[in-house]
Length: 257
Image (cartoon, rainbow, N blue to C red; front, side):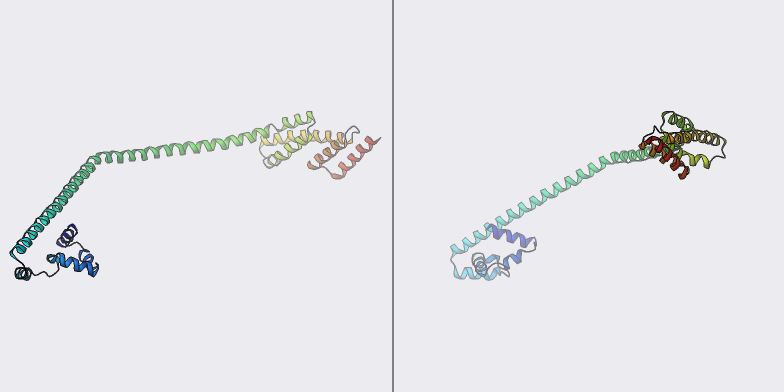
């Protein structure tokens, strides 16, 4: 009965699929439903049903059928009232939720306005910070470049002193390396008085270093390894290979005696 009531409610509210569900049932089930519930058949003729019931049944059967119909009508009314009540409750609940959402959105509008203002202020502060940092970054970069230039100039100006220390310690290889690193720049800008003075001092120190290397190369007390190193240093300084070879042979010959 509950299933029949549900199908009737579905048909009453025009729910799609109610007729399809009835038509998709098996023929046996359809016959059973038709026999058990003639009032539920499509195209039911009330007058014909009443005439047939009066003609074939007794007074008791007619009363029983009338009571059954009345009971079904009450059940349908109760179910319909229940459906209407449930739908009404859902509608009221939806209305309340909609009202709450509108209220919440309205309450959020001041906060959203404050948040938007805060974002604008943050963007403005960020722009100011970037401008300040960018300016300082350019200044720092410029200062770093100047610092590197100053360090290079410091190395250049200290080159004569460095060569003198190398000469005093006998570190001729280091002196040659320092000279080779700086002499190109000094010769390129020798038109500047300061660099020309440094270059003159450097060439003076390198002349002393060459003389020391020549004397050392001819010495009989120099080891073979030191003699080779001295020869290589003189070659790096641009001396004549023939003269270096001659001095090397003189020193090695003297060392063999």
